[in-house]
Image (cartoon, rainbow over all chains, first blue to last red; front, top):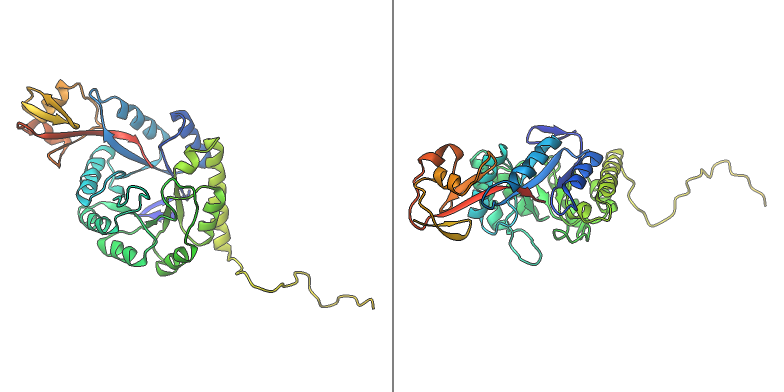
Length: 257
Length: 65
């Protein structure tokens, strides 16, 4: 079981709720993948206030945990206010903290991220920070009070897959007891299996599932890949070597000449 | 009174934030509100007096990654 701020979950797949062809396909993807945590956001509601209510009811009906985000925020103060408003709406102290630092790569502004994390942790939030694979930033986020880290492995929505595997290995080795969730950049189930084989605790996906030809089938494929990668990591993987090692024992081999 | 509601300049007679929500036909327990960059909790809206040129944000759940 994966434990996040005291909550135990069986599924190691966290799923975003954006960009699906329809709400029904999102709901089917959640059911097929057995995901237990969904990310959601907040946006300006048009007069009348009905759209958000319909979406919120659908999410509530799915019965998962909700992880609100601060997507689109570019300053610590924006992110803190958005987190406070998300807590009011969703009734949870969980917050996926995003403070975007670059318009093209959507990489986090890690300085503002640490500032916002410190404020929110002190205010009782349980922060899931979207960060880079930088170890020093990770340390500062833990010092701020975070108990989970969510590094990217490639830019959001890029589908490039892990771009710096040695850095991800370092992160796992440096934070052996901290839940590490890969957030952003995965495109294929094999990418998810790879990061799980590296020992990451979970994966957060959105575009790779929602943008697939068949999002429901892809959600299931990712769920299987995540489970396979995690199981492989737990089983103890062989390290590659340069020379061959015969798998069939040599002892007792017949000599014909 | 001139108010900026979700980025739009509006002329509204409401005295409190709760009255503003009613006058604009907002309803439901899924709304979050902020005035001039500070959150105003649900229970405080009825007593929260608005002033000319206040900037009001009214947010609700939507899809996100």
